[in-house]
Image (cartoon, rainbow, N blue to C red; front, side, top):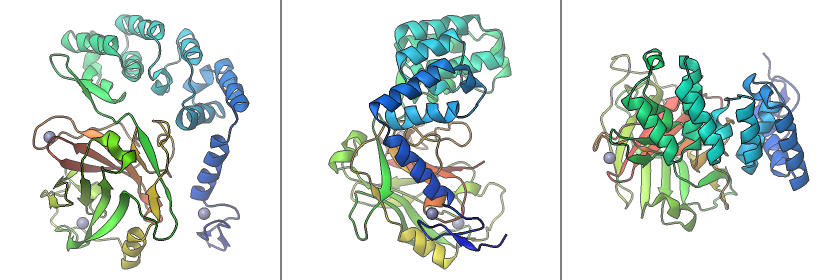
Length: 371
Ligand SMILES: [Zn+2]
Ligand SMILES: [Zn+2]
Ligand SMILES: [Zn+2]
């Protein structure tokens, strides 16, 4: 395909006339963010009247749903009640923090569920609802598995994770997501930011010889980042070329004064060497990216259902299933911290880097997913 056109906004060479996909996505989001209260009410009515279309993944319904949730946090109990009445259980996010009557409806359907798919969907919805009674029910199902459990890969406590929490054998809750979310936005030249993405390091990767990169450097002492409870600097470092080819996540320990100790890693296919596909100009572009921490917090699901937004806190846009790393030091599940969409910092690359943290052990994990 010849690239005879250019994105009028950012100058990216294109094979067609119009905006590049990133500028298009940004424009769409700006329009959604500008919805007036009347427009939001109108969209909510639209979803109420067409709720079944969500389960069929039809548009414009599905896109409207994600716009209401991610940009306006505007999924009402009325919508949740309607979804339950119509037995619509996708997307599970419909039921995030749903009221008690809706929760009880999901629970009674789940306890009567015969099929594994049905049970899996209902567990995800209940995980999104997420209160103590939801925990009690999932715990009960974990302790006394129903026949459908054999057909599922994981336990109810792993389904709970999709709602940003889980529980141990005694039913003690662990929160896996932060309850605040900030976006990364394009900054002006030399603008300072308590969060930096993509700082090239001095050391090289033992697998490919490419440069190691501090993918995320964050100063938890900034007022906006107090919700993280990190009283200093968090650094998450990996090889951007190899992180998708490792056995398990990449890990490092960090010290609050900015220190990093990278843990040894193994390549997935046991090969000793990888080719490095990142060119010097790509490293330079990564290092010089203009992303800075946004001034104001956004809804928790702001970074879900899109491929062009990097976020700190909130919920991730998992390309595959949600995946919480286990801390290699204490064995507890790590907390989801941030997502970095590769294409926002390395042009033309695919997938997402998910960064998690064990605040107790000061260990960061990084894992890659793509379609
Ligand atoms: Zn563009
Ligand atoms: Zn490497
Ligand atoms: Zn730990």
